[in-house]
Length: 159
Image (cartoon, rainbow, N blue to C red; front, side, top):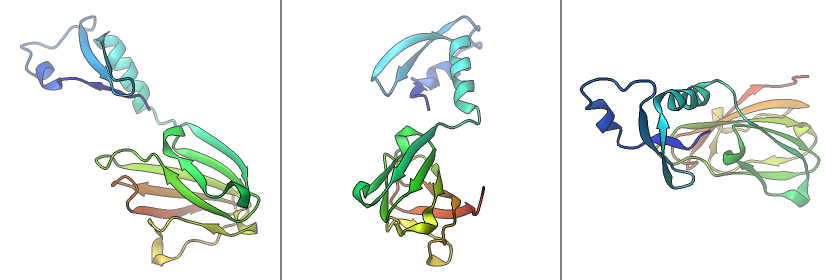
């Protein structure tokens, strides 16, 4: 996801007329901590790219007990694929700030062959983690920086 946000957007809303498509505005890149001038046309293009329904897939690969705990790093994407080759403990890192809602999907392969331990912050329906199958899709959501994480199984036995 892009780290570009509008700076002083209230000034834009206080204009007597809407800016022209080739006018420039000042934006701040929160990732780099810099400001830059950008045309309204380019800004709209960047914002539309953010709004597209496409997510980066983080392919973690095969993991086993020697890799434990396995970090699901939210800064690397919203969809993570992982093959379980031994007993592992999963942990989530780099959730967005506590003022943002966020979700992660994990496509877990061979989770039924080994023990997978989840963070204590994960809250499962009926209080129990699901039984994993050969290929399972799990969804996790938080709105408080991972203090509590809702966990759901959205698909099992997918081939």
